[in-house]
Length: 341
Image (cartoon, rainbow, N blue to C red; front, side):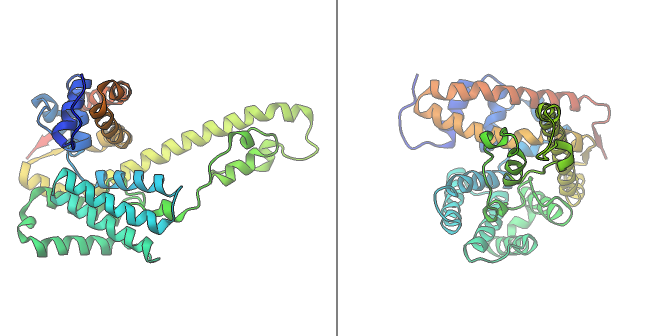
């Protein structure tokens, strides 16, 4: 079955996802990618609330960050940083037009555009200044937004991340444009595995290299040391990978806690409930949100053209979706996962 070619809407994309995945996977993917909650079961919504992860099925700054990152990383290989930033701004505006206006998305878009304008004009980006300008301009245009719960949570979570969180700002506090300022060099597998060249390949790829003594790079190294070098390289890669994973989880935890510094009072005031497992849940599933968001867009776009095209990506997305659902269900069952006041 194919869907007639016409200008797609969120309803079109959601329908495609629903045809390619079972529930609750389809509803969850549609929520993560497009912010739709219509097909989410009450059980899943309740578990998301208990675990403090309901935000993953709402359009937020994360969506703006992912759009900007995907577009920028793609265009940087083709055009200059300034042209890339200008085109990315256009994509941000187009994304807002497509998904509709909401306070959290508008706030993130303003901050992202300000950061990209800084790149265009060769100026340094100041996240706190961008936050102040975005929030104040929004309230000047529509003072009623100050009473909007989504605006309050989005703005305060972002402020917490800026003041106390990681510089990576994975929670969508701002568009991370630092990748535009780096001259990233691809890692050459051929040069990596060439004896005597792999250390330089690591350095060119901006990865840490082990001490020279650990790899026996001396010209007069014995044949025995040369034969053991691949094992040492593998051990180094594994240790570096574990260290990167540790840093990733630590950063996710730091961002999660920072985002809650100012939002906990708002949550208690409005819901009279707080999730005690929220840090654990968010760290466990945080790494899946970005890839699943992109997967949802790809599934919807390909499936709109021809359903079998989107089916392959949908199958691949099922695995992290199942993992996410399992983590949420498990953490929701932990005693005192959510405490009422």
